[in-house]
Image (cartoon, rainbow over all chains, first blue to last red; front, top):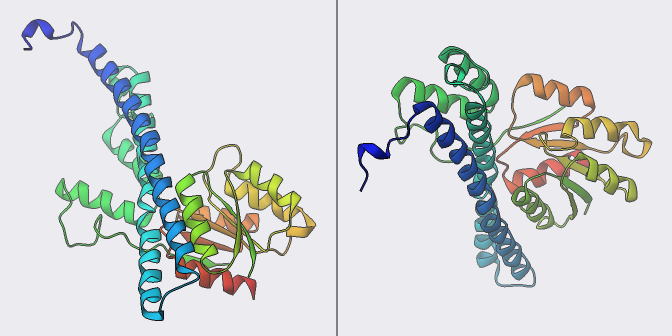
Length: 157
Length: 120
């Protein structure tokens, strides 16, 4: 098992390698999660096709409602991919810079990093979640933020 | 029934938008970014275009700007469907010529009602 000899000679190198590995793993996860999401989408398409010719009105209504719920819920994947992309970019920058500049987004201080994160996570729900995490260090259930996926807004110009 | 072009770089989002709109009886074509969308839109006329904002090659706001330059898309409803919700980005979309700004996640029935509204 591991001993003190297993420690790499330089902490700086370890951090860079870790960051690079994390970036690779994240890219892999993003790529790997794409296929199941597409498969789920295809299944929904088949359900939709199967509904068309079709059964009694109440059953159809129920299935149509379920279908809408699936479409709404499956959008988690798109948001997940965007968040993972942010993390990947952050880690890539971390790996590209020497240790004193490792805060990411080119930020030198924590406040700058927070401001950069706020700018990047533009959606209101993200902002609320970030605020909550800053205050409590974690997300509690039942307060709405980070819980059930909210529906987006719409505005016609 | 309308002929709709849905533009998004995410395969799952393209599927979901297509599914939501086709279940409402619309005919839906898809494109993966602004460049492909322009090519598709030049080959055939669409009644509505729904586009994401952040995409590779050409983003959604540039796509809207480009489409508005074409006489056959001057009055076609162009909707943005995005996770971005800042007033600044919305203003950019509006100035480019977008008809509306929808923030993800979208509800299929709501999307259908908005499409119906912009088509009237």
